[in-house]
Length: 456
Image 1 (cartoon, rainbow, N blue to C red):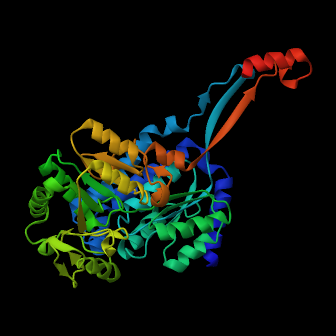
Image 2 (image 1 turned 45 degrees about the vertical axis):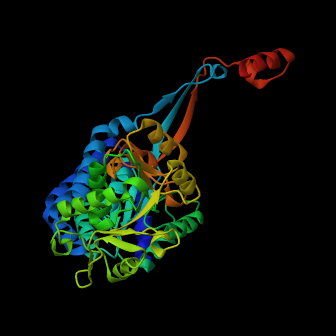
Image 3 (image 1 turned 120 degrees about the horizontal axis):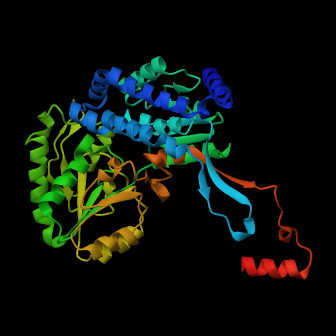
């Protein structure tokens, strides 16, 4: 693994040359990234089809288009983001100017997952580049076609001393984490996130951890059922449920449960046909291990909708489970697949009390028309981010930070928040030499009296 050490050293040398500090350099790299995507767009579709059976529409909207949009937004605002930010000073600081300068951390490492293997590799890299860092990305070995293509694209487009790809499995990640980075950005499971944080602590390296958890969708009795079902089905079964912010389970008011299930069934048919396993565009499960794990959940509770599987294609049709309890295996961990357990409640307050006792999820979705209840849910429960009367859509607004809290992660990104994540906020005070206030140096009751009046 000596090559990794050499790569990190070459990037550190390049960073220390200050070549990345300039706006023109950064904007040039972002434009090169855009051109790279345009050049390889057809190949990206093919790679995503091979890894996950993604249809072209899904591949564009959730991966390629998302990255294009991030680049466009960053190009538009980068000059403004890079400016020093002036701040006010108290009266005790007469003759000073104070400002915040955003400086790059240095050599950054991005470890990406397999579920959105293009988007979740390149979107953080956009922020790292915009902030003036060098970048090493480690794509997931579980999406080999996309990993290989990303390595080829970046290798052909960028100088490795600025932006490079390191492919490999667990031992490669371990070798990377043995090196000293200035910032680490990880997307993946909570269990691995703990390992990343432990390794980063050896060098006191700051981290952003984009993890997961069991993200609930709460459907109150006054919700618009048809639209709620449509948006839940879209949010849950996009990418076959292999989305960190997919609704993990539903909490529905007991009086409307049956109606909701009927609407969900109707929407599944509308979006994926009556036989989703025969739908050539329905995303497959990433590998046999995950397929077997998910198939084991199908015996929990009672299958209300779906439940069929195709082991050869590694496909599980959109499935809804009822009569499930928190003691069932399906409710113990994040599902990360096309299986949706449905729980019921009588009082919204009971749901809030229950969820407060559980780990904080990456997302939460509330469906209901009463603003008072909307406000109560959003205020009383802690979660990374979420929606009222929708799912997933908050991710598509680059002005909203995306990230977790507690066991669902730390730090956020997208748009300006990506730039800020990969920038150190450096505080600077500039003082005049034309005069010098004697009060600061003490000496005498008068000075103390004046300072007390000013500071109290």
